[in-house]
Image (cartoon, rainbow, N blue to C red; front, side, top):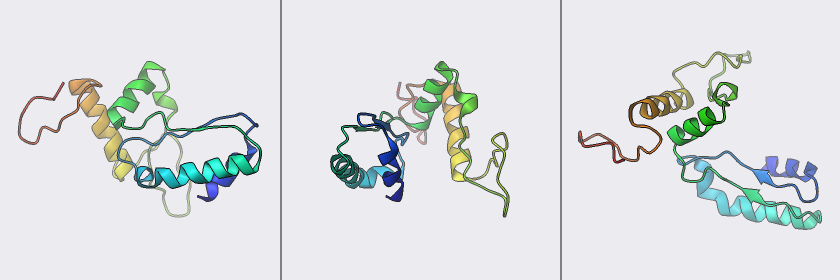
Length: 128
């Protein structure tokens, strides 16, 4: 929660938008983050709000939105870092959980589009 202290650099009425998506661990503690943010805002006399506009959106939906806004090439998803080095933005490892999730989202988007909601483990339809 230390990063929440950095929100005090926001202007008095500036809102904070978080990019957490469906499946992120953050959702388990969303209420605590909201309470801390609200208390920090109140203590500093600020009126900004905390938003998480991607709540319930899976990776493929995020990828779809980024493509529509022509922002996909500006995003980074790789969590891996070579020991003692910083990775360049154009070098995803392809094997960390974030890279695999991103590649799966791209594959699902290409195959079924942004409305895909089901898993196809039983060979059924895509759930569109």
